[in-house]
Amino acid sequence: MIGFRTLFYKEVLRFRKVLTQTVAAPVLTSLLYLLVFSYLLEGRMRVYDEVAYSAFLVPGLVMMSMLQNAFANSSSSLIQSKITGNIVFVLLPPLTYWEFFAGYVLAAVVRGAAVGLGVLAAAWIFVDLPLRHPAWILGFAFAASALLGALGLIAGVAADKIDQVAAFQNFLIMPMTFLSGVFYSIHSLPPFWQDVSHLNPFFSMIDGLRVGFFGRSDVSPLASMGVAFASLGIVSGIALAMLKSGYKLRF
Image 1 (cartoon, helix red, strand yellow):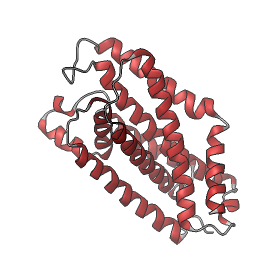
Image 2 (cartoon, helix red, strand yellow):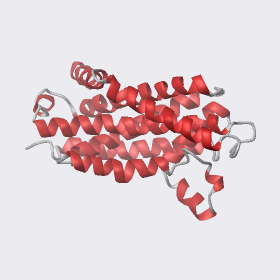
Image 3 (cartoon, helix red, strand yellow):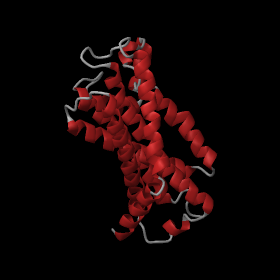
Image 4 (tube, rainbow, N blue to C red):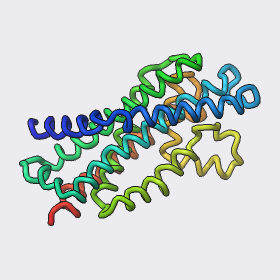
């Protein structure tokens, strides 16, 4: 396990060295979303009768930040290593593909958790937020960060240039996060778009996280957890298959 621990430490150290960029900036962005949207819609929009709109926003912003930053951590690390050529120093040691996968994905989970906690701590200054079921929060936070860490691993392995990873993030990750119920309940949508939203695994994770805070959700938390871990299993299987085959890593 020395190889895994070393790779994991390297990846955590990588984003820890630039915390202003990797943690502080996403926290500030989410806080601005909270302040702007709560100022505009507080008192005009209410999703759950007993929950203020500003409080409703917070779990969605926490999850959105975790998803985007977990993906960014693994994808940016891999593509930068491939472009600069220092990926060879990761490939030369006798690391199994499981250790390679676990090192990158767990580091992405750590960054996602750091950003999520930062957003939550900042939001608590402005919003009275309950905490009803911490176990649901931990479960969905881990599943979401691991899923996007594995997805970032796939993007980093498959891409040859930074703009290909950026396209993956801009045209897939960003739309899926913004259209997953961060700023609204899917019950406010027409029936067709409600059905479409249920196909988005990011919706299940955001809705599940709200259960942990409010004890309320649009769908069953057990169903959402099933979707989250099923998605994690599928994406992890693809990532492991790519690493085992050496796709775009062995030259």
